[in-house]
Image (cartoon, rainbow, N blue to C red):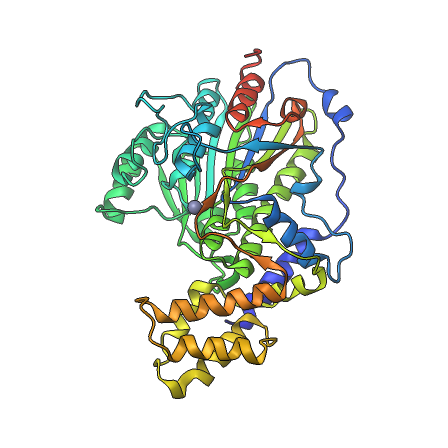
Length: 450
Ligand SMILES: [Zn+2]
């Protein structure tokens, strides 16, 4: 809801798409060192990022920037990946994270364990054993499911205290991103657990800047990119760049970078916030690609998703209208907070409606859509949160005018895309299960065929 954040987002978008970028071709990538192993690995995971999320972001931006593409969709290898869990059901981030990190399908909520509860070894742990340095970066909490799948072993993803114990014991070199989920513990308790294990806790942009080769957890409060007002919050790209600097060493590194809030925005069916999270994630991919340009024979970039969130469909060919979504000025979450300050009386429909129109940057509601919205605002709703129902309805109407439709507020069973570029990229060329990502990375890190 402020101009600063809008400008910030716009500048960021321009940065994302600025300039032509030469992706290393498959041929170039095979001209590599004589070793079978890869020295530098970037694994990017867009949480909840389906293919339509990327197409929507590209179509919205292509208005005014014809032909502009996301960096991740330009990678030379693009293949289909099945995300279903061990029960062939729609996965959560814990089971999907475990499949990608450890190569075994499991049941929802389990981290680093197979369905029977047997402990698994992640690709990050194997990289560490091989002498590589390891980094974990996320816009979500660092003890949330996706990063935790690389170091924790718990049968329920909300066992935050055990997860932080496993995080401290991992010996991984760099943790960067969202503050920890606390559960029943305190921030001080978790800080002590990490400090005892030799980690320095760093805060915000200045903290990240000061990171060295010593083990650290560079944290930042959770935030939506579209709402960011705090200049001390590092971007995902800044985390990625710093990690590549402090982790660089003769044995190489493995870095996992998660765009965690693409999922959160999609759970809210919030297309505007989702696109900004996705651009920030793509900008981190760009940072990995710039590193790869400097080390073309030694670097592998993999970009994948753990599952799709929101069942996003792009119903019509309404590309010009999709640009309207970029006019959104704040997240659903933030607009809802502002809306709740307006008393829910009939007289207050106009101020509430004005607030929503202003925040969405959209004024195309038809008379009958306005009447529907007024009926929600004034009517007897059985829903406990009438404000939320009202705002969801307004978002839904805006989306319909743009040819966008969400079909669930949960995860879907849709396949996602895994993209790759650089040394060993050919291993990622086939369609398959998410567990193949682990098998391929293991082969490239150990140097032995599976
Ligand atoms: Zn989710």
